[in-house]
Length: 182
Image 1 (cartoon, rainbow, N blue to C red):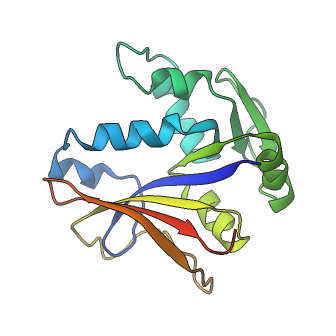
Image 2: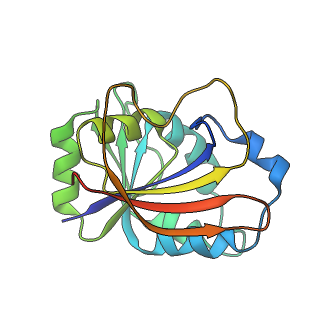
């Protein structure tokens, strides 16, 4: 059975909108291996429509020479949650239709190993609400945004266990949590 592992860039106050604000902190080279290790621990990708539509044109043309993550992003099976997409144009993509906990449970039962989620804030909040998110891989940037979409849904209480933490030279924290409800 698969485990769903969400990777998010977040501000201290939990905002996870399109993270253009991360550019102000530069890129610590130690972040790459941590993201790479997360990706290599997964056998499939689960995405919401917005993230799929951002990733597809960006990743589908990349090669391993452009980015070491390109083979994973392009060759892995991709499951896309969307009520509006009619066709999946990125290789190895399958539309699941609108979000349903049952369709995600089916994906979890079909995939051996990790299922990588990046961004996809609406999807991640639904997964947390339904107790389907197994791990949170948070890159916490040292700023507050004040407003914007938040990672954690209102009214949902979940207990997480910290498995790992790393501090990068740019002030970003990498926190890996496991849900105690899955």
